[in-house]
Length: 130
Image (cartoon, rainbow, N blue to C red; front, side):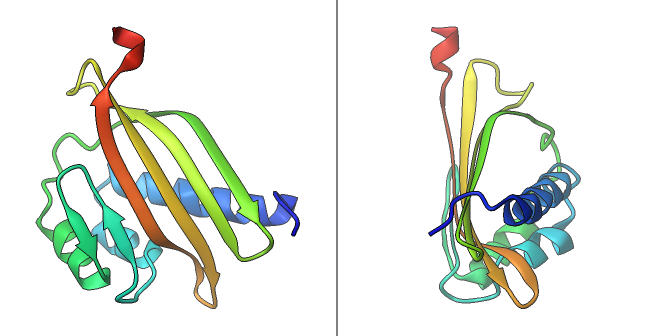
């Protein structure tokens, strides 16, 4: 298996960047489009465990658009072959001093483009501030 095929990594990076823009801009339609439309899609969030695309869509539709701005750091994208990839990043928000968020996404190539099939978001005390 080839890891980080340059053109595949470029495609996944573009999808990840589209996701980030949609997230901070609260573009719910784009966020929904970037998640795989299936009951097997999972998103573990800071305060919720979402099983299936319908639960994820309901969460997005109900979420407040306030305080979504963030800065990323330590972002690593790795592709495995031509059809799977993992994105990992840390994030910080001004409204959460002393905390650092962690986000991991598993991406899969589909006929409709790259889609998130599994995601995990959590926030912890920032080890750098201790």
